[in-house]
Image 1 (cartoon, one colour):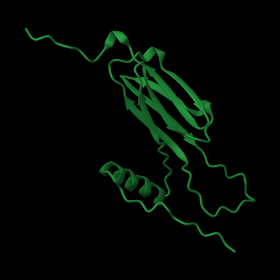
Image 2 (cartoon, rainbow, N blue to C red):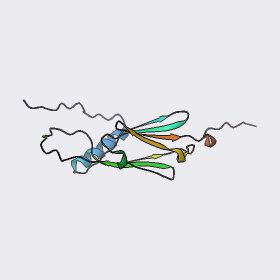
Image 3 (spheres, rainbow, N blue to C red):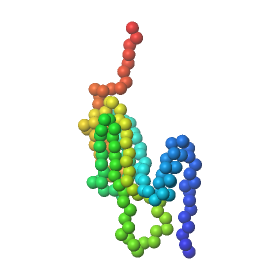
Image 4 (spheres, one colour):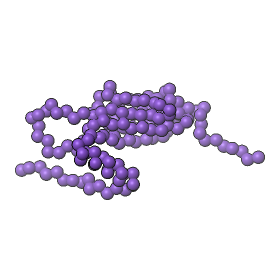
Length: 142
């Protein structure tokens, strides 16, 4: 009996951005290029912003995190291991290749205290807010 993959990913884009992302990612895959776009969750708390990137299978030493002109850039590469020649893959749905994600930071963050940790395939960046640079102001009308 052979295993036949059941495709539950019949993609119906819900946003224009999702449609464009799918177009470019599929185009790269069809042309033999490798692209890996990790999924991101961004959370705001009263004290900080948290950026969570789903990047399983990468060593923490393989991440490059840079801050330049209020742009935080995370890059790296997830490599496909071909050393297991005795395996007969029927399908590979996980993404491999180089990735690069950039985030524009607001003015009210303390860039000198950004913290990064990698746990269970999730890269967690904590970007503390700077109380002295509050973006919200109340203006009194005279």
